[in-house]
Length: 178
Image 1: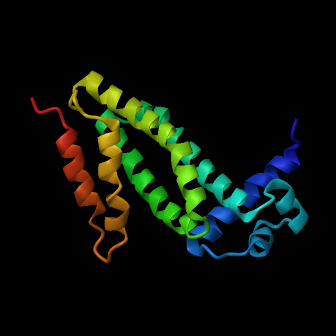
Image 2 (image 1 turned 120 degrees about the horizontal axis):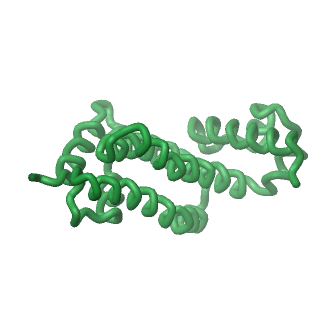
């Protein structure tokens, strides 16, 4: 069993790394340990390499996003839950781009492969709820939606943030037209 202080240290390291690496992909491990308020030994005990830390940050972010679906569906109609979830996903994709600068090509491919299934499962849950209440067309495919949303983070990075308008078009296309 992991001690509570060890869990807290790990959480602080992940939070500090998430923030630092999103701002600057070249942030050093030493800068991250200082930002987290832990010693270098604690950092390396939890994350023996920089790549291990970056991968943990990204996996943690994907788990947070995919784990939010049930709460969103409890609070909002399916199409609105999908909108809120997708906005969060787009923000995470933007942050991932910053994290990607800190990873090699092989690690980027590995993390994409590891997280694709959970992301598709989250979209499927949202789609199934929308199909059940008639707000999402029955032929909508989660993989297609993920491909379409891939363009949103790039649009959000431009001076005129086109992502909300583009998302509205995508969601309109998903609507079950009665």
